[in-house]
Figure 1 (cartoon, rainbow, N blue to C red):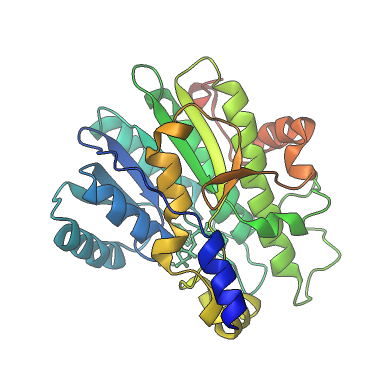
Figure 2 (cartoon, protein in one colour; figure 1 turned 135 degrees about the horizontal axis):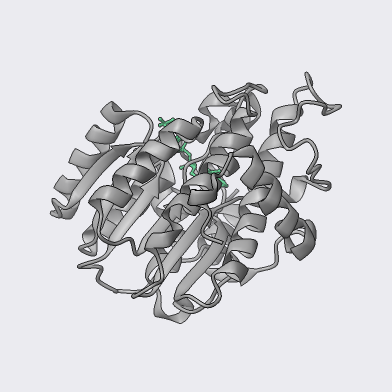
Length: 311
Ligand SMILES: NC(=O)c1ccc[n+]([C@@H]2O[C@H](COP(=O)([O-])OP(=O)(O)OC[C@H]3O[C@@H](n4cnc5c(N)ncnc54)[C@H](OP(=O)(O)O)[C@@H]3O)[C@@H](O)[C@H]2O)c1
């Protein structure tokens, strides 16, 4: 046990940048708890304008009060965003486009590991929509705001469980015809696929934005003791069994914070990070052809309208 703890302590990445963020606007999805909240607190301490994009405004309000109190930065606001609803994503984006003159950092952090396969109000698979389609739509709707004048960063919080996905069926991204349906492993398989999509999406977006001053990267935060297990038996058991070896939320937020502020990665794009270092994602996650096709299929699934298409 001591050896494992020592290993985790030695290998964990820490963001050492002292960069300040006055004048910068930062959106963080799923910022009312866990890794997202710790990221928001750190960036608030650096003086940024922080928008907590959360589905539950009560929880968001409590998180905001805590962040304002601990950081001394009152420039923290909350906006409603339910990634499992395409309408909610459109309403959130319209609000930001109307009321925020600039966006410098977009952190797509929210995520869920579900207990079962479930359809959203849009008829899409819940984990796929929350983790991938919702963020895909959100980023597309906001992309006109970034990179035109100042350097900006899009950061997608993925997971090493993306390695579980060995074959992404682009004809069945909502798992309507999947053979594992009904088994305990089915939700885990979908989670892995959704997190693979985060990496492929980052890669394709970074290609598309090469001519602008935008970096797009994805990351694995580590195994972190958060509320993440609350909707999934498998994740819950894992968290309870391995609690002593897991990172704290503050430790789990380090790679996200690093990508948001560190000068040594200010121009790095299209990469996957773990513990504040570039690492290789799975072979599938490096497949440029699949990344391109995923983009096209996702555009159709989220019903991106001609006026909403930036590319
Ligand atoms: N914890 C880990 O070990 C681990 C490992 C690898 C990757 N990750 C990734 O890290 C990210 C953050 O996870 P965490 O560990 O901090 O988990 P967490 O404590 O459960 O926080 C997840 C956040 O996402 C929000 N969220 C869930 N569904 C949403 C929806 N439909 N619309 C808007 N927000 C939604 C949650 O809001 P509510 O509070 O309202 O539910 C919460 O704010 C996730 O993308 C996860 O996949 C975590």
